[in-house]
Every structure is written in C-alpha cells, then in structure tokens.
Length: 484
Ligand SMILES: C[S@@+](CC[C@H](N)C(=O)[O-])C[C@H]1O[C@@H](n2cnc3c(N)ncnc32)[C@H](O)[C@@H]1O
Image (cartoon, rainbow, N blue to C red):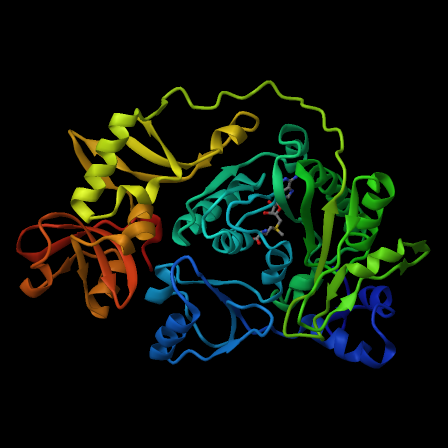
C-alpha cells in the first residue's frame, strides 16, 4: 500500500510529481482540493423537460439547485440531498453527472443530424448528454468493450429517451479500420488513471500507482489513432481524461501531432470556467507549442474533479485498412417490416394512443419474432462493418394482432399520447415506481378504456400500465427499473 502523508492524505510521490504543475502560490490549494469532497451535480435532460420546469419540480422537494454557469443544463446540489429515488429521476428528467464530466460534450458540440461516435461510452453520461444536444436526430454510436458495463449503458439510453443510438461492444481500436471516416464528431473519453476521481473516492490514493500511468498511456495512444481514423475529414475529435498525468494527456496528443500532423491539428477551446492551458514541458520532454490549446481543469480552480480536454480537427485523409468482411447486417431472425405492415403497426399505436405515425418518419422498422424495433435511419451502414448489439428502441410486441408497447417506448413517447393516458397522483406514482399495482378512482379512468395506458404525473411521463376492470392498473414497469 502507498504510504499517505497524514496532513494531506496524498502519497509523497504524488506531491513530488505534481508540485510544479501549478504556480507555488496555489500549490497548497491545489493539493488540498485533490481530495476534498465534491458537491454532486446533475444535468437536466432536455429530451424530456426544460430547466425552468425542472427547477419548479425540484423546488417542491426543497432541493437546492445552483446553476453551473458554464453548463447551460447543469446544476450543483448540496451534498446531503438524495435525489435519485425521486419521480423526477425515475422519469429521466435529470442525470447525476459530475460538473467537469459535462465539459467534453460541450466542447465537441454535436448537432442534430450529425453522425457521432462515443468510443468508450459506458455508463453513458456523455452519450445521453450528446443525444440531447443532437435532439435525437442523426446517428450516435455508443461503444464500450466492457460487457459488464453495457447494461447500465442500455438502461441509461432507455431512461433518458435516446432513440437514435446504436450500441457496439468491440475494442475501440477496431473501429478506426472498420468505420474509417464515417463520423462528423468523435468523442474519446478515454480509460485513464482517474486521478481526478480521488475527490469522489476516498480510497483512491491507497491504490495509486504511478507505474500504471505509462501502461494506460499506451492504450490511449492507439485509441486516439483509431478515433482519428473514424473521423471524417473536416470533422472534430474530442479527447478527454479525468486525470492529471501529462503522459496520458499532453504527451499523447503531442504524439498524435508528431506522427499524424498532416492529418490533424489542435483547435481552440472556448470555455467560460477557470482553467489552465495544457503544458508544453514535462520532465525531460518538450511538447508542441500548440498544446497550450488543450485545457486542464484543475480541482482548485472550480468545484470540479480534474479533467483534461483536447479538441482536434481532422485536416486530411489517413489511410485505414478495411480489415473486415462485411458483417451480417441483420441477425437471421430479424426482418425489415414491409411497408404495408409498417403502416399497420403505426396505425395500432395511433389508434390506441393518438400518437401520429409521422413521429416515426426517421426510423426503419424491423421485427425479431413478435418484437418490433425502431431503428434510426442509416444504422445499416454502420451495422455492415461492425457488430451492433442493439440499435434504436423496441417499439413493442404484437400478439394475435394486438400491440403491447414496450416499457422504454412508453417512457420515451408517452408524452405525445392524446388518448388512453391517465394522470395519477404523486402517491399513486410512488406506488407505481416501486413496482406495485395501483387503484384509480372512476374520475381518473373516464377518458380511458381497458388495455394498455400511459401514466403521467405533474408533467412527467411514468410509462405504461395495464388498465383492468374497476380501476385496477397492473404494474408494467420493467423489472430492472423498479425503485427499491
Ligand atoms: C472514462 S470511462 C467512460 C465514461 C463514459 N464516457 C461516461 O461519460 O459515462 C472509460 C471507458 O472505456 C472503456 N474502455 C476501456 N478500454 C476500451 C477499449 N479498448 N475499447 C472500448 N472501450 C474501452 C471502459 O470499459 C470504460 O467504460
């Protein structure tokens, strides 16, 4: 175990390593901030609500929200607040996301219609942020090679109403060769030594090992090259880490510029929070002068964990080998829905809930056995080159001509329903999110018929339920979502 200096809880070697990273006058503040606890932060999900409405809802709970001046949808919370068991979080109105972690997507600035790659995406805080910035338009490939983290990625994409995403679970090193020059914007939020996370993890420095920095830096270099290959000429790449180590930050970007400088250059980053420019000197190494365009967000300069962000623009093509024989694009059980069946399925949605079929114009429909899926247009172009584990959103299942909408579909599109939608009380909603059936009084059911319904409470969409006789609503919350 690394010995910690009692007065700072930091290893002596950590202090030696970074004492010249900041001016002497701020050294004590810097080291003190490296382990001081951080206020939690959230990001309002603009796919589901607005900041003003969310602030009103938060006020009903007495949550103290302090706007983060540089993140338009970000707020800091006082630490003791427990918000995640609320109806607002259940419905995906806000995501608990550390303030500095909101910066890389803001720098990348994905727009509606862009094709965007998130190379190391799980659990999806930045993927969901980018999906909201894209207004669910375009294509968003979320990749992560760690299968164990994929279920939280799927959960978050469903909960936060993301409809235009694909998920793959390959080593991101493969993507550069399989999806060469495919994306307008690429985010590489790299696996790193995570020194910045020490503010959240009090045990972090007990395992800190400087030797690991060089190993992870090599991993990051090859991922950075893969990111460059995936990006279209003229497109943008954002490289971010939550660590202080220059080997993982400026040295890697410097390596990319040195070796692929004909194809890539650094761009300025415009941020309205205090930060330090990237360094150009570290130990015996001197980096390109343009490295000052990169950004170091240091823990004593703002109420954040340490982050490093570089914005790169691809200026010329870079050959990428196409290693792949095209992958089978549909699994053998998955079929495109024929146009007449598409109209029929969307008519079932419209007949039951009044949701206009035109809402789904940007989607292709496929079917796997009884399940119908909404797939974002263009998904096939990606699926031809890399195995896609999941594309789009399940619409529902059809049994004997009857449609049963899926839970994520009801949560994502339920706000568009004009019929068979029922407003319930907060007490009923509370029963519902705990997985229990609820019982309505006759005034609540007068505009609905028995069968599937959408439940709402105070401008929040809770999802589907099954209205039975005498006002009983059978709970249809997906098991993994039930609040305990
Ligand atoms: C910093 S975390 C990503 C956090 C995520 N971007 C977010 O904001 O929620 C880094 C991720 O990289 C993934 N990873 C590590 N090596 C990878 C590789 N070679 N290819 C793809 N993903 C990788 C890890 O599984 C981990 O989920």
